[in-house]
Length: 194
Ligand SMILES: Cc1cc2nc3c(=O)[nH]c(=O)nc-3n(C[C@H](O)[C@H](O)[C@H](O)COP(=O)(O)OP(=O)(O)OC[C@H]3O[C@@H](n4cnc5c(N)ncnc54)[C@H](O)[C@@H]3O)c2cc1C
Image (cartoon, rainbow, N blue to C red):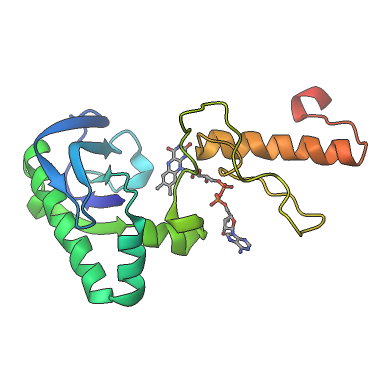
């Protein structure tokens, strides 16, 4: 879940990132309970908002993605209501944390697993791929080649537990290496060719 706010206020005196323990847990409409609020204040990047204004995001992980994906697909009013309800909880908390911002919010954007699925087509709207399981060295169930599909290589955050950009980039390199090996072409990186 990502809540993005365009706030018509200079927030340059706040730390750019904080994880705040909450006195009372936030309960998401999907049932997940959150004991902390993670606030990212983009006060260090002048390109993200006009002078005197600030972009702020709050994000949460949820494993209950079906709630959002199903609601968006089958019950749009319920989906909108859930987003609205959750957003109001966040605004109330931010208002205290950021010393009164409620009346200065100019833009609100809420992204749910349904949004991530819609924009990236990632499986179940996941943002990062697999988390490592009990066996940290276990292979991912998703290989570079997919059964029944010739001349196709799949490189993504699903190829190795851990996920995110580092894994997506590393597996891209690994796939390039494998293709070079298959076609007996020397594998060279840019730094080696300089
Ligand atoms: C809000 C957010 C914040 C994030 N923050 C971080 C972070 O701080 N650090 C970090 O490391 N990672 C972060 N991530 C995760 C990171 O962005 C992803 O792990 C990474 O982009 C995955 O790369 P990928 O190549 O596997 O998939 P993607 O980048 O999703 O690329 C898949 C591509 O395949 C295309 N595609 C999908 N289906 C089809 C199809 N059927 N046919 C053809 N094309 C298709 C999509 O359009 C897309 O271009 C974040 C993700 C989100 C959503």
